[in-house]
Image (cartoon, rainbow, N blue to C red; front, side):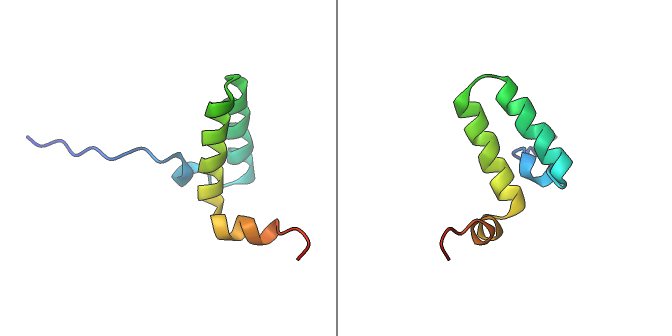
Length: 60
């Protein structure tokens, strides 16, 4: 029997602002900056890097 395993992608489950807030709160509660940085990356991926950049352009 062949078992197919796929990599877990938390970004697929971050579908609302509340989900994102809870995810980041849990990440920061670990007290590890690296863990929080990875969580921010997941949020950026879920939200869409292009959309995130366009909404936060400075001076444009």
